[in-house]
Image (tube, rainbow, N blue to C red):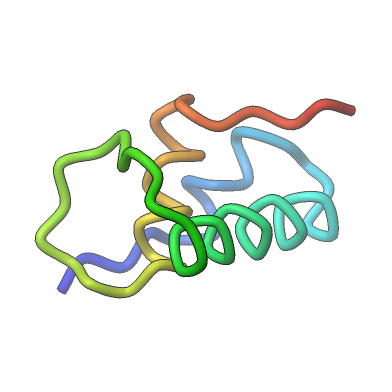
Length: 63
């Protein structure tokens, strides 16, 4: 199982609170809705998938 590091996701935004909110909101979307997954992941954990999408730039903050 691939687990993204904080160092990788920190490059997206320095605010760990905003990142936590982004990950939580996206993971909730993946769990509750029938939405497209933007990364090719074998992982079933929605939080990990959300983190991968954010790291790869598919999900961005609306600061």
